[in-house]
Image (spheres, rainbow, N blue to C red):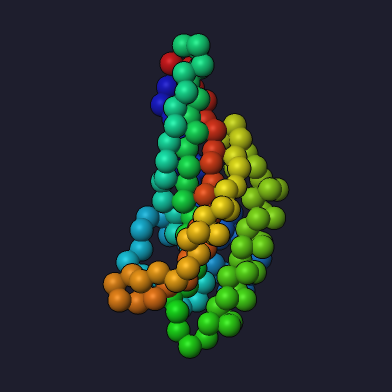
Length: 143
């Protein structure tokens, strides 16, 4: 049986799109060339780790990178406040559905990248503000 990496990613997208914020969050799967000036998000596959549990069970810890941010413009205060609202709403929504609608055995958030990587980043000559969130999920399969 193969691991299903797409379903947790789709569920994370659904959770982000369903946040009770105005305007609704634009979410894409894959790496965007740029972000709009309003807060949006993108999801990427990140680091996997596979453990063989005595030959009877394979356990995959798969990380998903969520970049939540905006392209910097003249409205940085409004954008930063919107970013804070999105992050706050996502944290609550995530912990209300830690098994991502049954697509994973468990899931956790890693926010440590926000300390090191939340700085402004240059993409194709445009400045962006990104708050990285890592979601680590556990998937299991019998070999």
